[in-house]
Length: 445
Ligand code: HEM
Image (cartoon, rainbow, N blue to C red):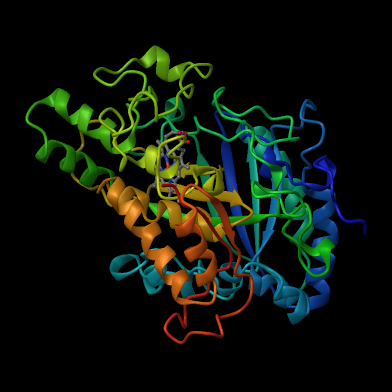
């Protein structure tokens, strides 16, 4: 297979769910499958290729109904993908999220033993996602998808989650969601921020040049090329607790909305604090031409309008001065909401399960996560982000990549690439347990 050296995306080999925005409003179903028989698993993959929608033909009437398929590391094992090939995949993917719980902040109540079964277990091999604009189209997509695995011995459906868009595209806390998306070179899908330069496709799809000029490859190349990594989590939201938090920490009713906006970086309508810092502007919030048309650095470098620790700014600092490079941490968000809406004004938990099915796409899963961390739990401010980054730089300087780090101290402002793509650093015992798949730093003066 020829090496991809140009940036023309092979759209017909990329899943639609990776590049195409999901329909709005939407309905979605996630199904987890276990492969008990290798032959059946391989037959399933062959059938999947007939059912999965590609990113080509975005204007086709079927384009806003997708069926996507993702495999876990255990799934690749069940299919018999050799160890040598699996070893060429991202280390954090191979480990799985449950094994990395403490690093991800999944501790205490959120620790893996409390996760909904079988999520996070070795039984989940394949995740099938169907998303459409309405129930009728979803059912048609699911019918096609079910043919893949029903009545196939050796394949068992072990979990299912239905999702639907709450009114006005809001997530369960009541904020308009699905606004900000990166532009990806060659995808034909425009980004939502007209001021953002499109990102190199290699940040999101394997086999293409990334923002640093590198191309992420697997062994054999065909295993990963045109594929990507999907971070898939079920996030339960405590809506009543969030409402009580806002009330307890506000003097007046209107302060509650301001506090909520400061935590999110946007008013609940979707209007960004960057463009309307003092009052909500629902018209702006609903206007997709304007509601993401802003940067931070020139107008609000200190975060006086949009706090550095607000969810949206922390997850995408745009052009703000941070101890990292925001463009190396972008992600495609494909989350969908699940569960019933807690009626307006209710302050006590009704026991219902509601939240987000979090499905984020990116070629560098570790850097996506380490930038944002457990973002909704913390609004501690920009310092936190900086400290995390500095801590990471220190851990690098301990290992054999130290020479790169000292090099950058000598040349402040230099953009550096420190790729530690090997297994554990053999030169230093202190960083044992800390594998850095690919660390990319920009050190500014
Ligand atoms: C239950 C948990 C979460 C909720 C309720 C939530 C909600 C939201 C909302 C309402 C927005 C603003 C709308 C938009 O820009 O589309 C947003 C933006 C965003 N969120 Fe989350 N989110 C959650 C978890 C996460 C997590 C865990 C991450 C990353 C690890 C994340 C990453 C992002 C990013 C990258 C943006 C776009 C920021 C921008 O470009 O301005 N979110 N989220």
